[in-house]
Length: 259
Image 1 (cartoon, rainbow, N blue to C red):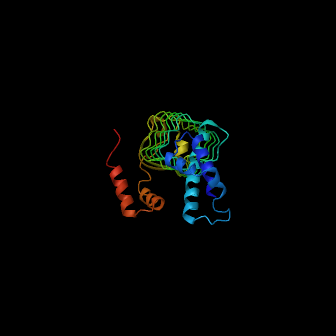
Image 2: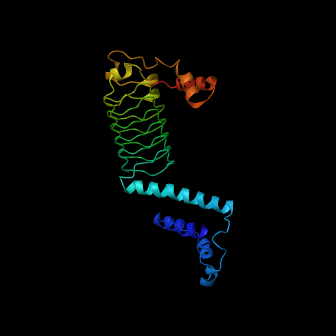
Image 3: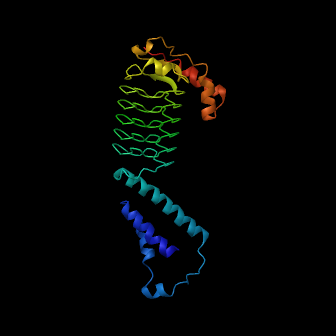
């Protein structure tokens, strides 16, 4: 098992441009040709610890290998549940990719192509999506707290149930975006493009609390604090925190009115 797995692992590491530990290489070459013939027979039992190490290394290398390929090969689109926390993904082509449940928190997706991508329940907390193309993408239930969506193309995007607390939306195009059940909490949307009153009133409507709305969204009048009394329960259910803690979060946010 070890004789077969070792060259495979180092081959994958080489493809990734990583440098293997020279001590490990030396150990793998230590046996002479004669010794290699007289080593323990194939039926020798491999220790559980050695097998676990091989599997763990191979799994980690494979995920990184898959991610590197995805950056250069648009046909590799299955990244469901991938951990890409803090990754540099500027300009990457993820058109139609399956990123369901992926962790992209803190990642840099500036200018990335995410058209038609599946980002259901993805963690995009603090993610840089400025200038990203998200047309027709499905972000239902995604966490977009503190995300930078400035200049993002969100036309026809499914944003139902997303959490947009403190997200940056300057010049984001929300034309025909689905905001049903979205949590619009403590955000400045005055410079958002094409956010219409119908999107804020359609059932099930988004939850509004301490939202600075664009002037054209005031006709007919929309109360930017209409759902503040409902936000604590929503936060408590979503993040498994006490209702008291959730109420404190809302109270603190409401201490910062928009100019």
